[in-house]
Image 1 (cartoon, rainbow, N blue to C red):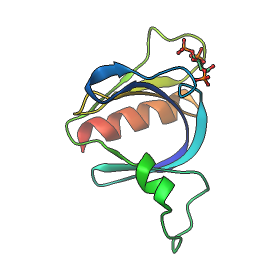
Image 2: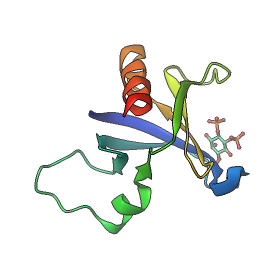
Image 3: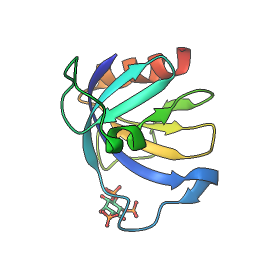
Length: 109
Ligand code: I3P
């Protein structure tokens, strides 16, 4: 599955609150391949090499949990992703249907 997602980093490994200055929303082209959610700055091109930054932004979704961010009302179609190492991201999808698809795909791999 792939498509645009806007990301906010809420907590760093071990659940430590991400410091101010690093909590802004950023748009990525997201690609879920196996157990990795790749977050690329540019839209996917089949033969494009992943940059160092793309690799740094990739998230392992092994033993992670995605759920609708019912308590976050500043933006619509936002879900949480909590990873196995207790990082927490907020992701805003383009619409409710895509949000639900991301949640289902992440939770069922
Ligand atoms: C953050 C940025 C986020 C905001 C966050 C700020 O600043 O303005 O949009 O989250 O608030 O810290 P920076 O880009 O300097 O990291 P919201 O959009 O959810 O308000 P927060 O620290 O209360 O999460």
